[in-house]
Length: 335
Ligand SMILES: Nc1ncnc2c1ncn2[C@@H]1O[C@H](COP(=O)(O)OP(=O)(O)OP(=O)(O)O)[C@@H](O)[C@H]1O
Ligand SMILES: [Mg+2]
Image (cartoon, rainbow, N blue to C red; front, side):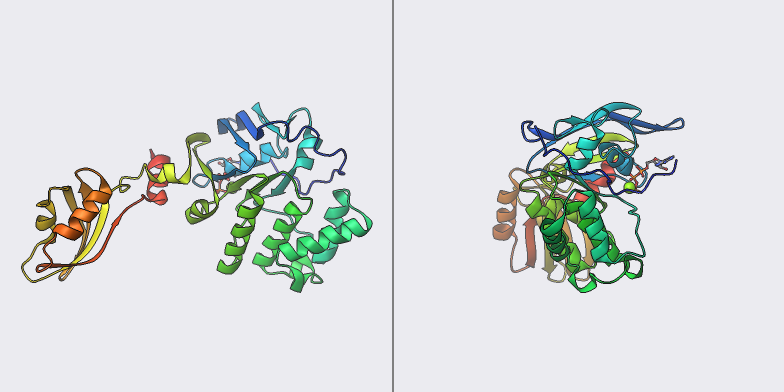
C-alpha cells in the first residue's frame, strides 16, 4: 500500500474545543493494524498527558511508524482506536489533524518551492492569512534554523536542511500534540542538540511522541519511554525505570591500577561490602572491574575507596552504575 503525501490539507476551523478538558491528550486504545495477513501493530494501548514527552522505541520494522500513521489518521486501524485531544480518530479525523503536528518518517518534498513559499503554503492550509501568516512563517523559520535558506528551493537543500523544513511544517500552527518520527535523523550534532532543546521546551505544554533509535535522545528528552517489538508494547516506563532493569544497574564500576603481583579482584572480594567481582578488562597493571555490592551500592563504593589497600592499588575511578538503556533495549526486544 502506497501512503499518500503527508501534509494536512484541512483548514483550521474551530479552536481545539474540549481539547484541554481531558487529562490524556493522546490515548491509544488497542490499536491494531494488519497488512495482508501480517499483524504489524498488535493491541497497542497507552495514554499521554500534557507535559509528557514519550519516546517510542523499537527495532526496525517493529511497527512504530505504522502506529504513528494511525494516530495521525493517515491509515485506519484494523481494530482498536485512538483519541487525540478528545477526538476519536475514526469519527473526527479533521479535528484530529488540526490538533496534531506530524513530522513523518519519509516526508515528501515540494522540490520547486522555496522554503519560504512552502511554509507560506502550509500556513495558508492551516488557516492563516495576512499579517498573522507572515508572523507564523517568520517565527517558524527562526525557530527551525532556516533563515539562511529561506529563499532556496527545497529540492536543492541538503538532507539535514530538508529535515529542518519538515520539522518547521510540523510546528508551524503550534499544535497541542506533536508526533515526530525520527525528528533528528540526518541533522548534524549541533542541530540535534538544538532540536532536542526545542522539543524539551515545547514539551512543557504539549503532549509529544518521539520515535527514535537514538537512546541518548530518549535519556535527554523523554519523560517516558515505550518499547515495542513485533508490534506489541513490551515496556512502558520512565527512562530511569528502564535503565534500572539493566543487569549493570546498581553495580559499582571500579578502574584500578595495581602494583606488580597484586590482584585487585581478590582484594576487592575480600571486602565485606563486596558480594562478587567480574573483571571486564585487564591491561598490564590496569583493570576495569564490575563489583556486585553486598548491600547498598553507595556504601560499597565508599567501602572500596576506604578499604582497598592504597599501597597495593591506586583507584582511578569508582562509581555506581545507573544502568544502560541500550543493554535493556537489547534484552527486552530480543526476548
Ligand atoms: N504500506 C505497507 N504495506 C505493507 N507492509 C507494510 C506497510 N507499511 C509498513 N509495513 C510493514 O509493517 C512493519 C512495520 O513497519 P514500520 O514502518 O511501522 O516499522 P518501524 O518500527 O517504523 O521501523 P523503522 O525503525 O525501520 O522505521 C514492517 O514489516 C513493514 O514492512
Ligand atoms: Mg519507522
